[in-house]
Image 1 (tube, rainbow, N blue to C red):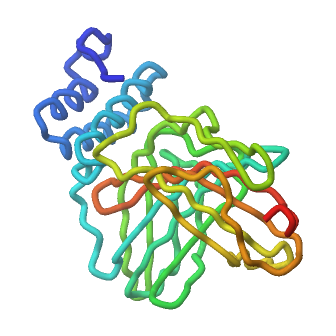
Image 2: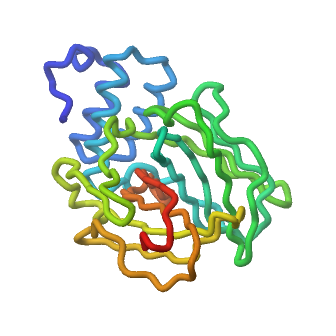
Length: 270
C-alpha cells in the first residue's frame, strides 16, 4: 500500500510528513533518515503502520540500495542480516542471524530493538577467509518491524554502528509440506522487480552431526521447484530443510527474509 495524503498523520508538518515528501521528491536517503527519527519518537500504532508502508514503498525504488548512504568501514567488507521463520512439524521458530566478512577479527556483535531490547549480543563464530556469523535460534517471536541498532566491534578498538529498519514480517507461511519429498509454495503478491527473484534453498543434514554441515545443498532461483531431486546418499535417516529466501538491501547491508520448513526423512524418502 502507498501512504496517501488523506492519512491523518500526513496533514501535520512533522517527521512523518517529511519522510513522505522526501521520498516523493526522490530523496530516498533523506526520507530514510526521517523514518529513523520518527521511530525514535515512540510512534502510535497508526503511525507505525504508515512507517512500515513507507519503507516498503521506498524499497521498490532500487531494492533498498539508496536507503542509506552509510558506507561500511574498510575493515568490514560485508554484512548480512538474516531473519528466518522455521516451521517444523509441531511449531514455528523465529531466528535471527548476522554474518559477513571482515579483515579484522570480530570481537562482538550487538543487535538491539530500539530503545533497549537486546536481540543479539555475543562474540560470533569465526571461519577462514574472515567470515563471521552469529545466530539466535530461539526467539519468543519474530523480529518485528521498526528500528534497530547494529553494533560490530573488532580487534584494535574499531567499531561500526548504524541504524537498521526492518519491515513487518509476513503473517502467513507461504511454504508447506505435501509429503517427505515435495512441498507447496504460495505466491506472495506481485513480485518487486527492483529486487532479485526469490531463491529456494534445499539442504540435507546428517541427524547425528551437531555441526549442522549440509551433506547436500542446492539453491535455485527463477522457477522454484516443489520436489526434491533424486539424491545419491548412503542409507540412513536425514534432516531436510527447504526455504524461500527474499533479499533486499539497506545501503551496503544485505537483508534476507527466509521462510523455511524442516522435517526428518528416511533414505527411502530421498
